[in-house]
Amino acid sequence: MGAVRAVEPLHLRLLRLLRDNGAVSRAELADRLEMPRPRLLAELERLVSLGYVAEAGLAASRGGRRSTLVELSPNLRFAAVDLGASSIDVEIVNGRLEPVVAYAEPADIRSGPKGTLLRVNELLHKAKVDGAYERLDAVGIGVPGPVSFRDGVPVSPPIMPGWDRFPVRELLTREHGCPAVVDNDVNIMAIGERHGGVAHSVDDFLFVKIGTGVGCGIYLGGEVYRGTDGCAGDIGHIQVDSHGPMCSCGNVGCLEALFSGAAIAKDATAAARAGGSPALAERLAANGSVTAVDVAEGAIEGDVVCIRLIRDGGRRVGGVLAGLVSFANPSMIVIGGGLAQLGHILLAEIRSVVYRRSLPLATGNLPVVLSELGSRAGVTGAAVLASDMAFMEAS
Ligand SMILES: [Zn+2]
Image (cartoon, rainbow, N blue to C red):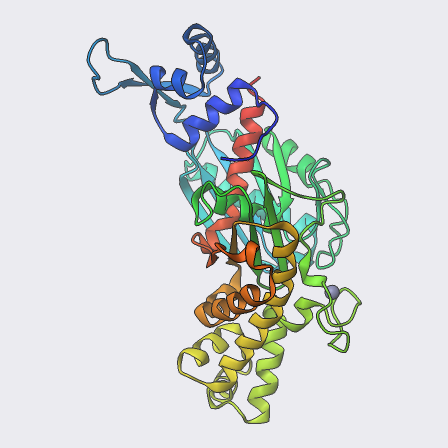
């Protein structure tokens, strides 16, 4: 798959292979890991005794002696948490990262780390009481801001007052007695989409989240690129209009000040009041406010103003992405987050700008597609990170 990576330890490669493929015979494992059989068998025995791997019966006969299957222990459990600006998503998954139980509820990240993490812990304990697990092997969590991946803390997150350097990883490790890993919300979405979505096995792609804010997960050479301080991909604050509106970051004309959940709600409300859009005026009168969902619905009904709002936004995003494509030469762009529901009008506009403005060589075969996992991308990626963390500890 292209990228040359540092040699990963055998136990990590073995456990990942079982995670991603299910039960595998000893013979096939030896082949796929290019490992002498005695060494593999010794490693398997060690992982069985540690409780990571279990016997899974006999493989179908290939003639001769039948090989026995091994799989990840059915008792493995990981907690995956995706904190958004206004939501908490929690899943408990098994070793193959299949959900055992899932909870989603609204929350306000601005209420601070103590209350938010208390609620996360309550949900995890509820899952335990409900029988989803006896003990957790690792917790993975994504937060909507820059993160020091090494230290397991958010770093100066603009929309998360009180969270700066709050010891998120330490608190979760202490509470659940297992390793924990903290990452940025867009990075975990990229990792999720790479594991089980449209970017499956793609080593170089950009995952663009358009939601309350705008951010980009940069997946290059088979890994997420996080940057020196953990804020790589913070594309929402690239300036696209030097005369544009004020942004929450204090600058003027940032991408997310012009196109994001908050920006499109503001523009749609103004359009509804100005009287140019029957679809939005009707919804404003009925609900007292309009949101991106109203714009999406209006566009489907053919409302000209709604279509224009989405096209304008797509053009802004496309302009920024065109620069990123020339810079990083990805082989795919995935669009996710709440505003991905603006769907094909948005996608068409982004595509047209990216294809027109990037170097032809870089866009010759560049799919620009919607996320396949949707709202599950984040928890899926958090589960991948949690399992990697637990597997590393099996050394
Ligand atoms: Zn900004």
